[in-house]
Length: 563
Image (tube, rainbow, N blue to C red; front, side, top):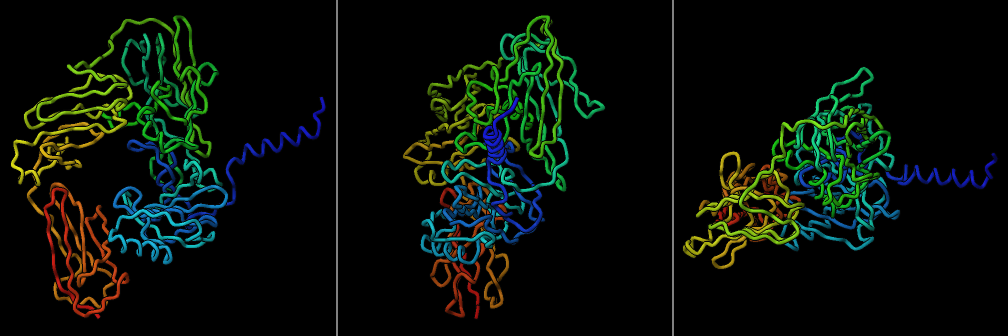
């Protein structure tokens, strides 16, 4: 059979387009060192998917970061936590690159943002420069690597997003090369009896053993089941030249040769990221801090990461039939780990009946729920939770208990305390605190005060009470002393600390003029760089004021000399 030439060309072009969905060889690397990853795209994190890749910076800060293509800076954000110092660059081809946890920006961008910080008298700022105001060329140094924000060590967090939808995509899709010749590691296999079902005589989630075969695949112990069931796995992937336990790129479940479920981390939207708590077995995570990825989709799961779904990945096991379930874990480079689960449809005596932990209070997820706990009232707006469940609430005269960490809250709920029993003056030093599980010490929860009512909005369960903080913050000079000559010093550094409610604000002046102090909360350090402002007097009077979250204030005044 002859195929017309035009059809061949069409198929060739179509195939080519399908294989080059994302531009290749258009973006240069953001760094001049080899790309070795500490974190991969889509990794399972607390309440979110990782939106980029974390590039190791050889445990160093201050390495140059380059613009990956021509573009214009569209956003600069500096915050104490989160991305720390972050830069967003829009490119003409419709993509935006993001660089986070930076130490500082290039001189032009640094001067631009510091001018705004001085205008606003604030270290934390977020600005959106006019399009074309801060242009860059491919290969320009735009910043330097750092450890700012919620970073656990020096690295570059790097993203590529759509400039239109702002959806992040896996940066490795754009031709960046990483070395990875290792198959993903399978840690655990779990079975879930879902509807009128049992697995190995249990109506509850259970772990299933497996062994490694000569060909490198894994074979699970034979499963006896009946009814509608599901499976879940947990595991990780390692790349070459790094010991980090990274996320698996894709998971596929095949039943008797048919794909029942498949998802991967090519892209996702920030709006759906919190639905990660429906992908994982959140109850298991709360108890064991292990993230099991369910291979079936719950009705309240709104994730768009699924490539294929048949019957929502749930498997109906019938009496007398046999099933071969294959699970494939793959990394971005295509290295695969295969697990085979033989399932036999047969009725078994129930050894472990379904456990339903009942309490006096029941949550209807699609309706608002409110409860009076004595010392406090708690209000859950509709759709705070994903499904209905019995909630464990503990009443008290001064302390209340709100469930535990085995249930995920998708939205904030409200806790309100009546503080009318406390004198008005004393209330200034009071706040709503969650008692830490480890030692029951109070941890500050952002508290809104209105008359006799203190309110907090949170997604965290636990024990809550009213706590009092009477101790002001402590300010300690770190690299200088009073009356010292600092002519050759590049910066001033101080530590600021508060033992209970935490730092709320800080302010510093020299000879009455506001100066920019960069705050690094991980080390409790504030730093002023002398290059920011030329001292016009030899004698410099430094004044630093720090206030905690209930208004206790400490002021340090010291004189130093500088030519």
